[in-house]
Image 1 (tube, rainbow, N blue to C red):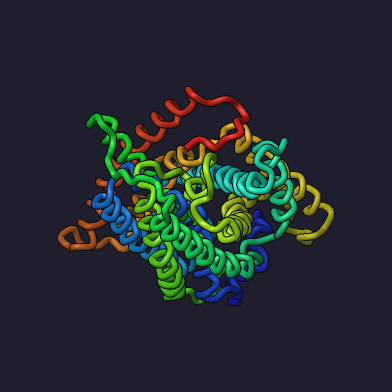
Image 2 (cartoon, helix red, strand yellow):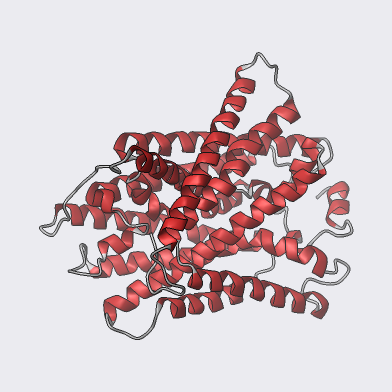
Length: 447
C-alpha cells in the first residue's frame, strides 16, 4: 500500500467500514458482485415474464444484462481514472459529487443508495421468513407459527451477523453465496422440468392482461423488477475492496459475475414461466409448493432449494446493509480508537441492531415481495445503474460528440429515464392496488 493511500486511510472522518480493505483481488470482487446481483430475486423472473410474454421477456432480460454490464464497466473506468489522478473514491456518493462538481449529487446518491439498501434488506428478511414458513408448512400445515414470527427469527440472526466489521470480511461468505445461487437455481430448474412433464402439470396460459392500459402497466412493472434483479448500486464500494492498482480487475470480476448470471437468470426465467405461465408467483418456490394439492416436485428437492435460498439471503442482507452501516457509523465511530474498542464496538452493535430491527419490522408489517422489487428497481436501480454511470463517463472522459460512445451513452440515459418514470408509476400503482386487499402483518406474502 502506497504512502498516499495510507494517508487516505487514516484521514479524519474515514469510517471503520473501510478499515482492513484494499486487500482483495479480482476474484474477490467477482464474489461480491455475484452476491449483490445473483440472489433469490431471480426466482421472481417468471413473475416478471408474465407481464411481458416470451418475446418481450427475453428481449428485456437480454438488453438489461448488456446495459448493466456496460454500465458497471464504465463506472469502473471512471473510478480507475480518478485513482490515477490521485483521488481514489471508496463511496459512490463521493465519486458522483467529485465528477459532477455538485454538492447536491452527494445527497442524491445517499438517498438513492439508502432506499435501495433498505428495500433489499427488507426484501431479503421477508423472503427468508417466507422460506422458513414454507419449510414449516410442509411439516406442520396447520401449525400455529405465523409469517411475522419467522421474520422475527430471521431478524435476530441478521442482527448477530451484522456485526461482521467490513465489506472485505464478507469475501468468504460471498464465495459460499456464489455456489448457493448456482445450487438453488439448478434445483428450481429441475423441479420446474419435473412439474412440467408430470401428470399434475398445471394448465399453461401465456396470455397477457385484457386491457391495453393494464398490459402496458404490467409490462413496465415487470421491466422495473428485472432492473432490480440486475441492479447493484454499490460498484464503487466493491471496487474499494481491491488492492491497488485496480486497473482491469473489475472487468475480470464482472466477467465472473455475468457468467453466473447467464447460467442462472435464463434457466430460472424460462423453466418457471414455461410451467406456470401467467400464474407464476413472485416466488416460484410457492408455485411449486401450492397451498392446495400436492407438491409439484419431490419435497426433499424443494426443501434443499429452500435451505440454499435461506442461507444466501443472509449473505445478501449483509452485503446491502454495509453502505447503511457506513453512513451511520461515519458520525458514531472514532477513527483514533480501535475497531473493537468499547468506544466503537458498543455504538456499532446498537446502530446495526436497530437498523435490522427496523427492516424486520417493515418486512413483517408490509410483506409485498414482488411489488417491493418493482419499486426498488424503478426508483433506485434505474437512476443509479442505468443512467448515472453513463453521465459520469461522459463527464470524465469527454468523448467526442460525434463518437459512437457518446451517443450510445446519451441514448441509454434518455431511454432509461423514460423507463424509470413509467416504471415508477406502474410499480407504485400496483403496490396501491395490492394494498387494498391487504391486512397489516399478513400471514401471506403479497405478489
